[in-house]
Length: 156
Image 1: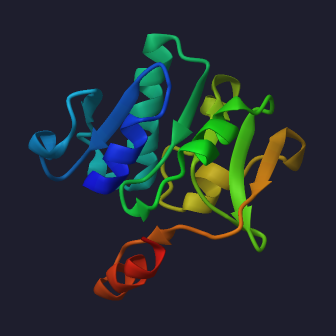
Image 2: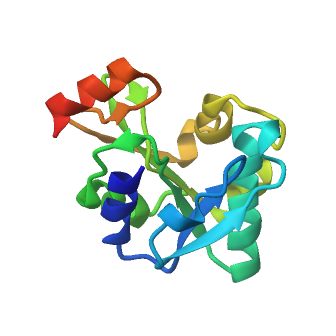
């Protein structure tokens, strides 16, 4: 997670937000991140996404770009490409599979499910007319198991 946070810290955006749930990770988060506590973390991924979007709405942001702490490496150029597209939704794809970062404009925030742990419904359930995809040459590694950590060694 710290590798992802270091890489994201270099991204030029209005504000960096970290949503934490079951565990207090405050001591591990760089100072340039705003930390938001998700008291409803047990409801799943959508509760964290909506927690972040509630904050973004209160701040008056017109878009949010989502990256998860268990995905490495994060490519700064890809983050910028996704965030700078003019379409309401943008994300990278690799062999027709979608990845993060995902950019979602504020006009679509109310359509994001509030009770789903299904990432596809949350981030990729939009009409194709509002989506721009960016083809990438190599997907990043999503770390969920020890074998995923071993795969990471081949990417770094």
